[in-house]
Structure formats: structure tokens, C-alpha cells
Length: 72
Image 1 (cartoon, helix red, strand yellow):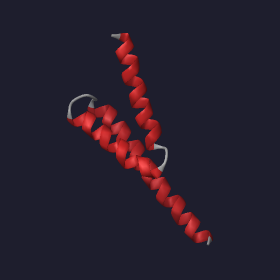
Image 2 (tube, rainbow, N blue to C red; image 1 turned 90 degrees about the vertical axis):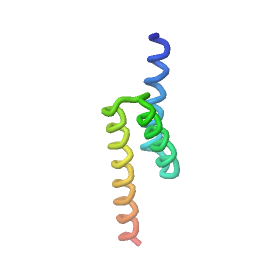
Image 3 (spheres, one colour; image 1 turned 120 degrees about the vertical axis):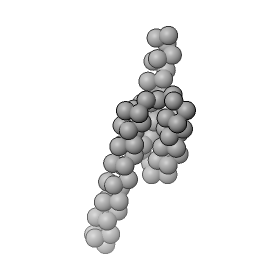
Image 4 (tube, rainbow, N blue to C red; image 1 turned 180 degrees about the vertical axis):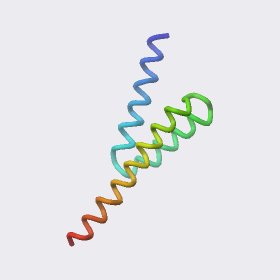
């Protein structure tokens, strides 16, 4: 049981890392997290944490793009 719990926590960690990664990966990994939540595999608080990271990444990427536009 400990083995599978460890593997599952590593999968959640991977999803979190990808939500902070490349923009083109955000949607794909957020969709995976939505599927895990809808199927009852992850709890609401875990899903909300992933959603917060997704939203944070999108907001800060938009701000970074705006800053770059201002510099040009």
C-alpha cells in the first residue's frame, strides 16, 4: 500500500510541476487533473490546489507577456 501511495504522490507532484512548466503543457495537465477529480481519484482540496497553480501560471504568464510588450 505504501508503494502505491508513494507512486500516486509522485504523479500529483509531476502534474504540479507541469502546471508551472511550459505554457503548451498547462491545458493538457490541467485536463488530466480535472479527469482525476471527476472520477473521484483525487480529493477536492488536491484538485483546488492544482487549479490554483494552473491559474497562477496563467496570470503570471499574461503579466510577463504584457511586460515584454511594454519593453518593445
